[in-house]
Amino acid sequence: MKKIVLAAAVLVSLVSCKKETEKEVVATEPQVEYSVFGDSISAEGALSFEEMTSKFGDLKEGDTVDLKFSSTIKDICQKKGCWMNVALADDKETFVKFKDYEFFVPMNAENKEVVVSGKAYISEESVADLKHYAQDAGKSQASIDSIIAPKKKFLFMADGVLIKK
Image 1 (cartoon, rainbow, N blue to C red):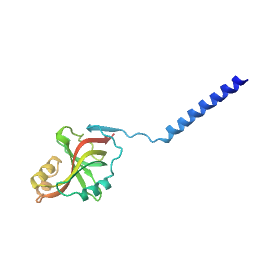
Image 2: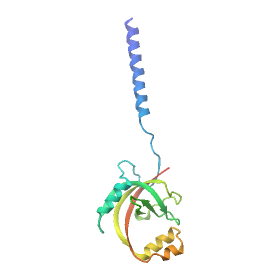
Image 3: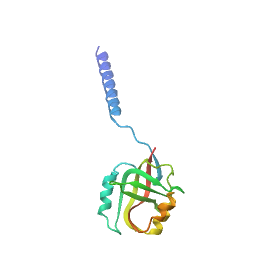
Image 4: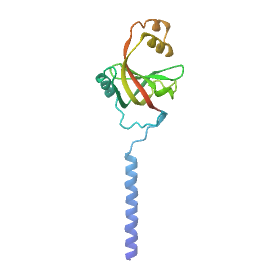
């Protein structure tokens, strides 16, 4: 009789442990899958695009800050995928290049969610550079010709990029 009671108690404890584990699995959120470009990074701890806009507002020319943020890709170089513009708050954007020209991103990743890790800085872009980037983006000749003054730009040198699948 004691053996039956002991066996029943062990069985009940095993079943209850299994149910608890199942509850934990159900409570977790599904993992988001990303394609990785450059250094392997994680999305954990990434700033929002609103927080990133604030960080850029605190920078002066010559300052750099290492960080990671998430946003949406607005457009990509249509020649190689060698740069992208990523959305910030208030209709602003940051121009993202890739460290040492070591990697590129897919040219069809426009409007996808992205996490970038690297160095943020600001700079004044020359008219020649602005025209070159407009040409790479496939802008019209009229749009390229309308660029007549340098522009303060929010820049980012990425060492790792995640693009949501």
